[in-house]
Image (tube, rainbow, N blue to C red):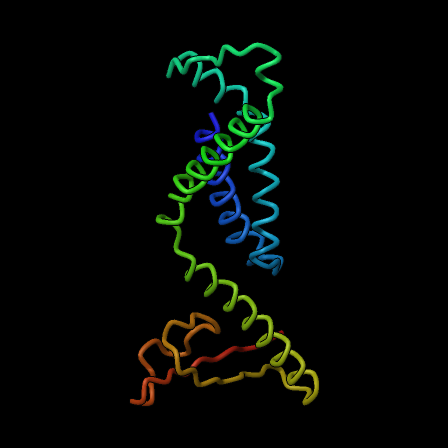
Length: 175
């Protein structure tokens, strides 16, 4: 049962943490670790709800045998230790298998989205402040970026580069 619990726990934690990081992380600027902690809460709640189902599945569908020990045997230190060790090994194997969502997630895309949102906020602040300082109807800020992967600010001209791999970006502020 602990292998099944480990698979479910880690898969839900990774999936939920990624979705939280992708959406709330970009919108509200929360860190990846904060998103992981919220994903852990979701996973723990799912574990409480699905734990009995996993145990029933193992007992009925997989027909795993029940241990037939007396109370005296159950209280032996060696039996308790063996049970705990089995639980830890099962949980570890399940958690490793439950890491499969990492194969499906593009973590670089999320980081680019966060960087883009952060840069966009900086540009908005600078352009709006400059507009107010000089009393202009509109302002424009240009930035030369060395990395074509940078999506924000919006490209002024998609193919406009200086032949050295640097790209020109612009941000406008109007009323």
